Image 1 (cartoon, one colour):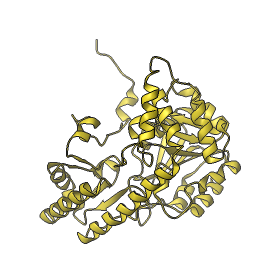
Image 2 (cartoon, helix red, strand yellow):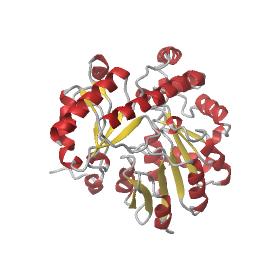
Image 3 (spheres, helix red, strand yellow):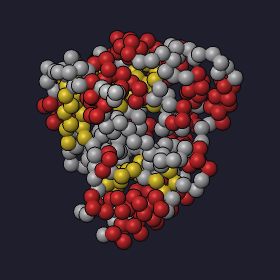
Image 4 (cartoon, one colour):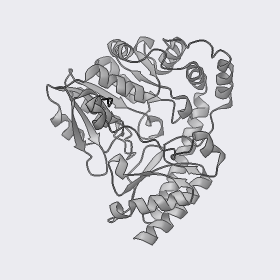
Length: 370
């Protein structure tokens, strides 16, 4: 007999990683391949973090602290919040999936902008909830007013990615505050701030001041980007104690492994070094953006560690050709079609040498196919 799997599996889009098929992250690191597809940091982890992880590896025969007690305590100190409100996770994606499990069901609704983070469509497909995708406004930014009009009594979850992935666009805190204040209390707002450290408009911690007045607000952060710890998969949510309890009820135990906990705790001790790396990325961003302009390529205004690059009027037709050209040149980027934006490319910033190679190859390819 044929095994019959749950019918909803056919509707779950899944997640496409940026690492090329057949290549591990280690393979990429050992080659000259410019991996500019996953919004990773081009900087190595801090030596102190590597040492902390190495020390923790000696106790791998023991399960990690299921409460991630020390990490929650250090995050509470870092952000000035009660550790009871903090839910560390196996990357912020785990929180998103757990939130879908805890808050969504058939008959419920989820509202989010599109294009936005490619994990969001999985939540509705896995829960049977109805998804409402709100198109981005001019400039590839969230249309918060349009999102508000889509919130109904059935809305259980509202997702706002700021800066937005894949467009990189950032909405000022004043607009986010106004939006959160107008969302009905029955709908949980998840403010996904995976790239918040890279914007230069507001204090990265500005949104935290909203938590005390809005029990329905959850803020997501991650160590993957600014802290150069994508390989450890550690993120966290800051929300109400009730939200944290709901996450713990639906996700697997020991979700944040011992090495991830040790690395994240150590990374929090080195705020100045992390900020220096972020500033270096922001400086390189300005240089790369000027490079796109030199090739007459338009981009969305980015506040992240990547650019959203338009391939022009014929972009949708030449997108695959350009991506193939870049791959042949040893440069991996993300095609916009799979991210909800055909005719665009999402390109992370690598080293100066990698970025220069990318700019030259991209300019040559676009001229060849336009």
